[in-house]
Amino acid sequence: MHGSDEFDRPIGLHLGTKIEQAAFVIAITHFCASQLYRWCDPRHWNKISVVHCGLSREFLEVEPTPPATAPHFVSVGRLSGEKGHLLMLEALARVRDGGIPATLTLVGDGEMRGRIEAAMMRLGLNDAVKITGWADENQVRTHIANARALLMASFAEGLPIVVMEAFALARPVLATNVGALADLVINGRTGWLFTPGSVDAIAGAMRDCATAEPAALAAMGEEGRRIVREQHDAQREAAKLRVHFAESLGHAEASFQHEWLARAEIERA
Image (cartoon, rainbow, N blue to C red; front, side, top):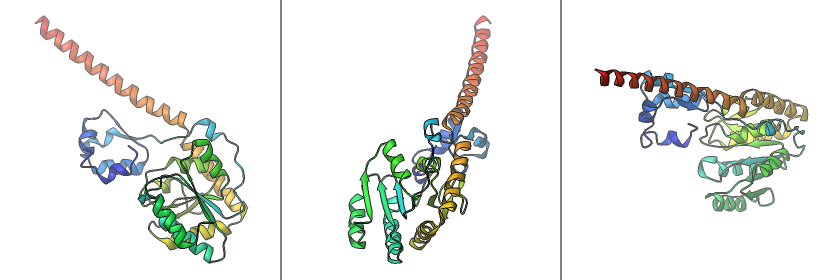
């Protein structure tokens, strides 16, 4: 279970029934696990374990470069309502009106693109914002590497892979305090964590990042990289998942053997 879409309709998805009937349940964060606890009887809580999403070694072993000196931000994700792009643009306009020539690249596409483009026009941001459309992993990596920081203004999230990718590339992250983002975005240590739904909060974080000393930004990025390498290595997390499958299959085999032996005794009788 990843979230956050599933947490908007837990009854329709029968989360409680699925948990009760499952041999085990994997949540990608403790926040995600807490939401699953809400929809099942506490006697099933012991089925729920946390195994993080992870990055490949190829990504984790990329040699990082220093963050961009220019106040250029990148946002990666579907252009949809819950990502907060319209507030992000309002914040960017305020930052630029305050004398900071900040720019933004939106990597992705989606149903909100028309509204985002209209907002760019209304706010006079056509020269400051670029929408790339869909991008592959290599293109995403390049866009993140060319930025000063990753910016997220989401109203709801689980724990996006792109945050891990940004930290793997030693880029600070500016993000709303939703879902499990606080697990990685530690205010003042790996980036800026701010209140969701607030243009002032987004603009304040952007200003702080745009005016931060290069050494401070580099230290944030390196700390994020250290945490991601420790907690989000795909091979290490996959090994944890393998243990859950192995234990479950072992229990199933034991149960089958017990049932088979009982049936054989009945037949002999």
